[in-house]
Image (cartoon, rainbow, N blue to C red; front, side):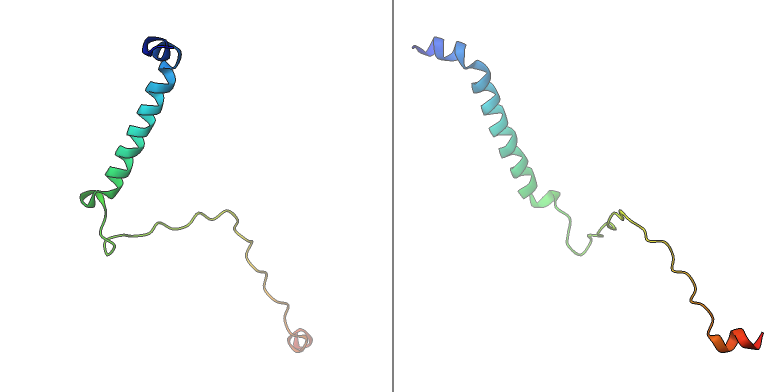
Length: 70
């Protein structure tokens, strides 16, 4: 199995594997660049996503003494 046969049989694997590796390397290089990072003092966190909002609490019943005076 020569180099020509290897390239013909595994062309997609060679190209995609190299591309994927270079893309990941570039992404980590960009993430590590200090010019592209925000200063921790300037960072404003976003509010969390609320998945469930409970209904408002109902008013407690009046005490028995107030009910008798009416």
